[in-house]
Image (cartoon, rainbow, N blue to C red; front, side):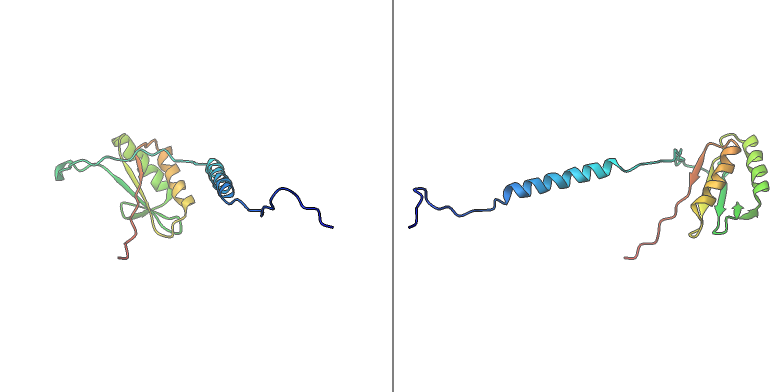
Amino acid sequence: MKIRSPLPKRQTRLEIIPLIDIMFFLLASFMMVSLQMQKVRTLKASLPTATIATASSKPDIINLTVDSHGEVTADRKPVSFAELSTLLADRFKQNTNVPVYITGTRDATHGSIIYVLDFVKRAGIEHVAIAVKAAPSSN
């Protein structure tokens, strides 16, 4: 003999809306935590400002280029690190605000550029810029 309940039989349902809310909350939480875990290290740089210059008032600029082997050229002339140190010290004695532009070739390593930057800082020069050339766009 079957005993029947006075309550009507209800079919079970899985509510999806609360599950979606929980998943969005977890996604937002993980994104916020992952952003906080990232360490940001920066290099303080004083970038030069653009000015209108005439031919007679050309500033004294030192252009350094570092190639893939770590060799340095100063104003398109190859120099050793000893010559570079004396060149930077002499130019700094003539003009204490002399700007230095450091450019690396495509295959230059980060370490060799930082090594040259260390030479510039040891000479006392504070106006340093890392020259960057934009890649040609393929439109």
